[in-house]
Image 1: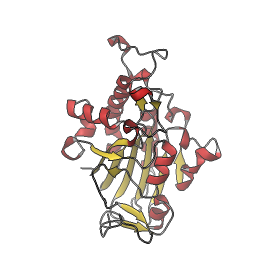
Image 2: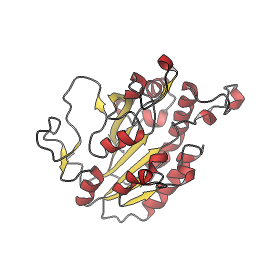
Image 3: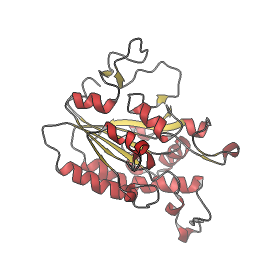
Length: 268
């Protein structure tokens, strides 16, 4: 990362609430061709999240603690705040003298921007403003949130506006938090296919998968908007349960919550 920082724009896309098993199955079946076409070998990496819900996971990731490979470690990190005795800071780790990654990147000359999705980015309350406040520029509208089926296209429209006014000589760090996978997601099912796409039927593992197919259908436009060279991380912040062992939702210590998909690549 010491060769990347300063020479590349950085894009962090958090597919909020995306489960690893659903992401891996769709990639293998050809259901997400855009993402699979950019992921190394067309596959998601299986990792463990640093937090079981959005606020905890993003607070950790924005301090440099990205999801950890599920295999035994230690695993060197891409980014790390200066911290004596860190066992995951290696020669290839980019270190920063700040409490959070956006501040560290700002000190290195980056313009930092957040385009939020779920409620922890809505800036409507002090808690909803905590994560956006880490960035020099932040955006959230109700049309970016969990209840709008067009949330991701709406967010990408805002990214297009942001990119139009970026000065050529200044590097960019952009966080896009995608709300589409989060409940409610029943409306991504096809009602004409008899899939039970109604609010009364509720969210299911199938509607979660339908939401990911929707994301894949639109996310190529996001990548096309980014300047080159651009280093990209696409990952989930946590998964969610749809009845496994009696559990529904997240903020629990279940395998489907702690195991997340992760990918990193440089845009071609």
